Amino acid sequence: MSERAFGISRGPIPRKEIIAEDPLGEFLVWWDDVRSTHADAFRAALNSATREEDLQRHLEAHPMLLVQSLTGGHGRWVIPRQRLGAEFVTDFLVGERSSMGHEWLAVELESPRARMFTKSGDPSARLTHALRQITDWRAWLKNNQNYAARPRPESGLGLTGISPSLPALVLIGRRAETDEGTSARRRQMCEDLNVEIHSFDWLLDVAENRARIVDSARQSRRARSRTR
Image 1: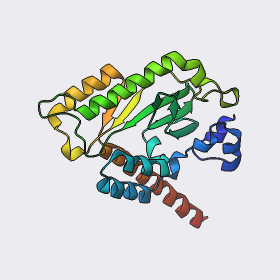
Image 2 (image 1 turned 180 degrees about the horizontal axis):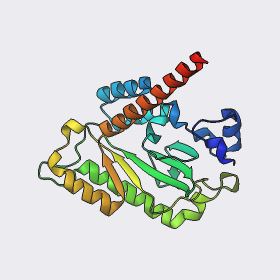
Image 3 (image 1 turned 180 degrees about the vertical axis):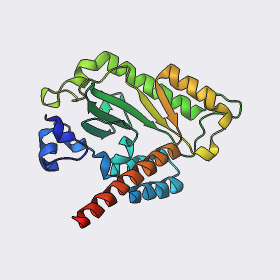
Image 4 (image 1 turned 45 degrees about the vertical axis):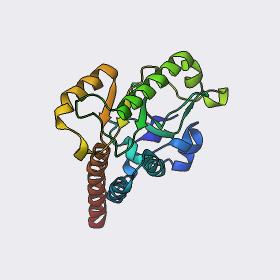
């Protein structure tokens, strides 16, 4: 597929053609679709959510929220509830394609009301469960990497270039309920396990920041067009 098809500015190629050309086209996401209204809606959903399923549904409806932390690339995909054999289902797989090839991120959601750590500073039961899920997904990929990476027309999952050691992201709890005293422990766990652990407020911050940039760029383009 032509790399210009996935350029940030989208170029002259209609989206329908890009989607039709891509075997994972139904999961394609354009990062610059995000607007401040999306961030506002996510904040409202987060404030009212009581279960991880509430946020799973919201993120499935607004998948661009999950790609705002990515650094670039020619294509981005957000695949919800990807089955890994009969045993496992990921909350999301997020992919991007850059000059380095395809890269994938496994996303595990936990309750927005769960704590990351106990009062004694140990990982909570919900965080431990999330990390175990990621370990299980990686073990499955180690045994089934060829099947996972094989194109869909060849009866694979179409996850080109996916690695059994793929990085992962755990979203759990709210910032106000996160003890700052556990920050060093969390950083060490992230380094040791190749897993980013964040509250849902982190995802909201990323979306708000990117939306401001995108909204500002749109306004600048409109202003320039009016002066021509």
